[in-house]
Amino acid sequence: MSDFILAIDQGTTGTTVLVLDPRAQVRGRATVAVPQHFPGAGMVEHDGEEIWSTVLEATRGALASAGITSDAIAAIGITNQRETTLLWDRATRTPIHRAIVWQDRRTADRCEALRARGVEPLVYERAGLLLDPYFSGTKITWILDHVDGARARARSGELAFGTVDTWLVSQLTGGAHVTDVSNASRTLLFNLRTLAWDDTLLDALDVPRAVLPEVGPSAGVVGHTRGVPGLRDGIPIAGIAGDQQAALFGQGCFRRGDVKCTYGTGAFVLMNVGAEPVASKNRLLSTAAWKIPGEVAYALEGSAFIAGAAVQWLRDGLGLITSASEIEALARSVPDAGEVVFVPALTGLGAPHWAPRARGLIAGLGRDTTRGHLARATLDGIALEIADLVEAMSADAGAPIASMRVDGGASANDLLLQVQADVAQTRVVRPKVLETTALGAGMLAALGAGVLRSRDEVAGTLPVDRSFEPMLDDAKLDGLRARWRAAVRRALIE
Image 1: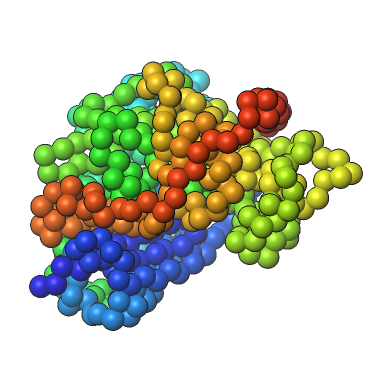
Image 2 (image 1 turned 90 degrees about the vertical axis):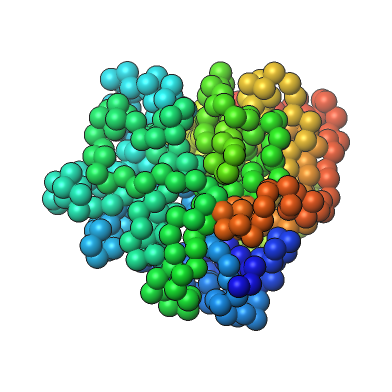
């Protein structure tokens, strides 16, 4: 059997599939856009069947790009948009409702009610999370309460819940119902210390245990392909991790204190904190990073809900640009944003604010404001969100973060990364391969299938493209941060 790995990266706006060789080099790739559905204010949905169709199409494209058939695939790895929630009929594998996407804010009132009942300290102690519509638990409850007969069917075992990884494993294998620790730890229902579903949390959120998947490792065989168009039967699914944990792994952040930031639809900063979960004093999250043979690792995480999506909004909502790649040149047309500040709270604010009802805000407009100023303020806003997270993470770690590895589509933007280094006051390091989320899934699958004996076999295959050092003088930095904080305070007013 060949040693090629198929890495499926099912993201919010698209599905990317890579074919990797045993040295983690990309031999084939394909990307297919995922249709977005917005049924109401603050609501974001995907269709489960459409997600699956994009996976099949991207898989065909990646195999063709690599010039191989599925006979050459030794294992499959999956990484996914994490908190996005599906429920489906176990017998037919048909979703009973569209997937509720992680960005969706419809359960804000439910989270407030749980908080008023005093549930949040329990959730934080056991699951490492705060009560926010971002996570899966309240999304499950919403679907059970809004689809006729769903709650009774869930209790009787007829329905299955899963994040996108679980949905894809079910489709790939013909019905296996499994997730891994990294995805389970994003549900509000999983105990970080026991690494098991927690009955007290299930009762608090009114989620029937019967809908939950089995929790497996991040590297290990959880099933085999069966009846999938374009794939031979019997390929092991041997790696699973949520997108941010997969990127942490794919960036080679194997040591305690290693930090990465992924710029996707949102932006996510994770720090490897080692073999024990760490409780944040600054409203960051504690999460399972991965479980591989001989090791369980945990991470601190800070989440900004809007990053690349802000650039998409400039393109699709305002028409300021015709393609996302134009933003760097437009932003460079001005020396700075002037007095313009953009707080990209288009779906609320994540860490460290956790304000689901916050709204996006543009401040400091004048007669001299141009498209260039708005483009530069957008890049500044993305970087300043991340700087807030880095500041909180440094406080939790008790030391400055000297270096941060970056990946994701927006990390190709040199200006954004220079601004990021300036406002976070840390070195920003970009690898040559930006698709480290898919790379991490592939590495985990290679470990799980025995293609690789240890993670260290690929640690040397992650060359650096460029590093960015802080260059902004203190006075300008202080002014920029002061204007940002003032604008955030306004965005937080409900």
